[in-house]
Amino acid sequence: MCGIIGISSNKPVSANIINSLKKLEYRGYDSAGIATLSDGQINEVKSEGRVDNLENNFDLKNLRGNIGIGHVRWATHGIPNSLNAHPHSSHNVSVVHNGIIENSTILKKHLINKGHEFKSQTDTEVIVHLITENLKTSELEEAITKTLEQLDGSFALGIVFRDIPDLIVGARRGSPLAVGYGPNENYLGSDSYALKSMTNKITYLDDGEFCVVKKDQVLFFNEDGKKINKKILEMSSNETNYDKGDFKHFMAKEIEEQPITIKTGIKEYIDNVNKEINIFNFPWKIEEIKSITLIGCGTAYHSCLMAKYWFEELTNLDVSIDIASEFRYRKNRFKKDTLYVFVSQSGETADTYAALDLCNKNSMKTCAIVNVIESSIARDSNFVLPIHCGPEIGVASTKAFLGQILVLYILALKLGSLRNEIEKKEYQEKIKDLKDLPGLIEKTLSYDNDIQAISSTFNEAKGSMFLGRGYSYPIALEGALKLKELSYVHAEGYPAGEMKHGPLALIEEGMPVVVLAPKDSYYKKTISNLQEVVARGAKVLLITNKSKDEVVSENIWETIEVENTNDDLFPFLLTIPLQKLAYYSALKKGYDIDKPRNLAKSVTVE
Ligand code: F6R
Image 1 (cartoon, helix red, strand yellow):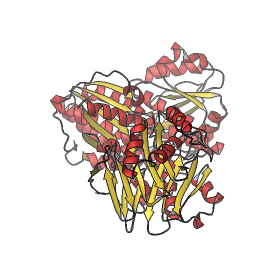
Image 2: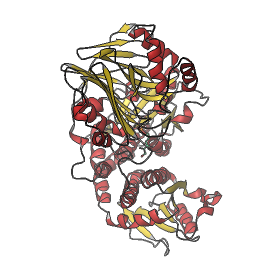
Image 3: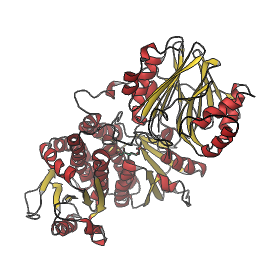
Image 4: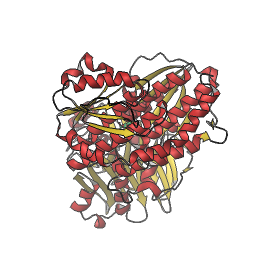
């Protein structure tokens, strides 16, 4: 993770570096730092914690220099303190880095033997000293090529030089990096979002490439140090969704935006007049696809698991799912007739990208389901299905999850229809039901007070469990993930039918257990499992859909009812109270909801 910015201009750069770093905080917020060049010296300032701390601790307005680099960190090597904060500098070279240098220990030993002194515990510092060393014997481009060859691992780098004060070097292997173009200045940034307030003209570096950024010129080089030409892309300049509005947190805003997310997704993919799904330019014939593998991390992996149920039900294809960090190192049997689907909000997650890269190297069919359409995963996939939910800033994924499962559901419906696995009438019914979904989500969002009150019990308990069967099981996992990442309380998601095989031992008097039991085909089985935990003293929060009939159990602690819909669509509605439960639990504890501890929004390290 970590965020990088660099600006080469004809005017002082520190204010714009600070602004960009604030935008990059979703990539890391352990510490922040800046280095500028002025009067023949490197001016380095850095602080533990947020960019705000950096601003409070230093007089940045008076930080001189028309060229500079900045960094927000998510710690990998070395604890998050100001010493380990980036930039790292020698007398001549200052570096910001996103990624991990895997051979840093060996390189460090070698550099210490040559007389270099290290100040931090980071892997990054070896890059500083390697460049300093290589510049003793080589011109700039050769020194950079040599240095990059010596590094194992992944990186995006921004580098400035005391003795070459008119340029910034950027380099990429594994971690994303973009160049932006402005009037009398040019930029380097981890992504277009960081540069958006300054430019919408972007070039993305590809793996192995580096660049030299001057205020009036940008040069690109391949890994052999040969000059190359690269395209400039124009990004859409829509900035509208980047503030919290009247909401206290981005997460609260993003939860409330979900009816719009779903409405937009439906508008993009569904022709309501002809009751048809439009997926234009799908590059393969339906007969060419015999199986599907869905790959993602965290919440995006839960979307994959959700999709497995729908794809199996609606398409009758073989479906497997994988956590990207496992897939990338397993011995996979790649099959030409498999469609590999990569699910990622950011489109930059290192493990998911590596899994995609592996599939590309084996000439597989690849499809990306992403929110950020300029992202690496989108650019390097054969086919992209955007989720169209606008920027998601809160670290905990909410609207992107619903956006992902919507697109996956639509894809499953379409493939099912093309494979003649769904009758036309049923297909059109399901499309019709989708149209009502934004309204149903909106209603479900309005049941708020109960959840606020309930959330205290989860905060006070030692731990909690989230149970579901069938379509509700992935949502149980997602609910538990949301609670643990925001409230820092232990929460476990489990298939309700698995409890008796071990986890039932955890249930004790008063333990809160969420049971997801919409009245679908799994309902009766789930209720039996519910009775089993009630019998052992659990405080059950039942989340089901509205209906007049039957008392499930007299011993249920609380019930939340969502709206009625068809069985396929309950997962969308069940997600809402779980997101709110996590939100209110964290709110009551006074935690930093948009930036939970130890996490970052875009996980660009493995
Ligand atoms: C949890 C969460 C993470 C992400 C995961 C993958 O709320 O947001 O688990 O889902 O880091 O990120 P993307 O979707 O950007 O690949």
